[in-house]
Length: 398
Figure (cartoon, rainbow, N blue to C red):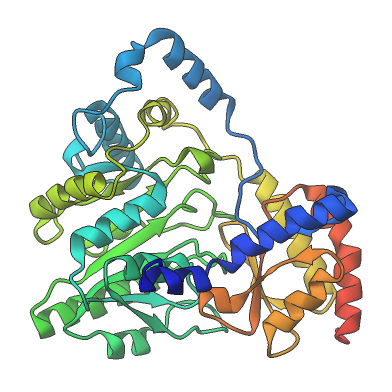
């Protein structure tokens, strides 16, 4: 028999993945062009040509024994880590070195590494609803306790009064994700400054260290000139987790990094712990070929025009049909208010029109649904008449 912990995890397995699998089933029945699958945040913009060129050059020119072998450190190739650090320093005015960077198996791998390094059983991890549902699983992996801050559905900025009230002596970490999955909201600089002040105050009150973990797979996907604050500049005990899944369209290659600044409490021990955690969690090291690829592509600019076009078409189309949603500033999601209290009922109704969307309860925010617009533009255009029928079913303004 499987463990009790895994029994619970299997029973509460991701609704997003389940919906994605349902999309594949419906596509076989009705044809892919007649199914409007907005369930999974899987980039559909091809990786830049420079990625292919880098792979070809590396496979041709590098010693394959070295290229496909273990790295000298579980943290990754030193030259790659130094290049990442220098890139961040140029962009954000930071002062990182190679030792501050741990290459990871995507952002998800990085979050698991840093939580393994930080958490004792019973330690609390605070998240702001709505949040990526896997944070609960990652916290539970290390016997931590997830503490939710309820959503401010007017702005989807964090509720800082509730945040301050829920910090306890057991609070070890706070996870933020901006641009946010599922809302597309970018936390403002003012929000970040106030959040940092609350955490500084609580650290002094309790005599503890509280780490801010910034989960940043969508950093490069920000629209209309919106600035995404770099959080190590606002709060010393910040750890950044980054992924190239979205910025370079490499979700299946599983490559990212952690930034652990020297300013963070016990930074030397934390860096060493992240190194060991990478090994004992079974990652050993981040994929070696992809480490070299991202080094070659660090200056590649993310073309967000495709996602921006989708954002405009879907947001304006749904608003015209009477749906309520906040205009996303980043990422590639719309978070739409369900016309009925039970958003799972609304998701089931949408499926009658072959529209696949994810219930907000998967993100700790019932009453809403997430629509991922990282799909072909034609999918969005062709889905709008179906959304119109769905809106009519619920008596929304047409």
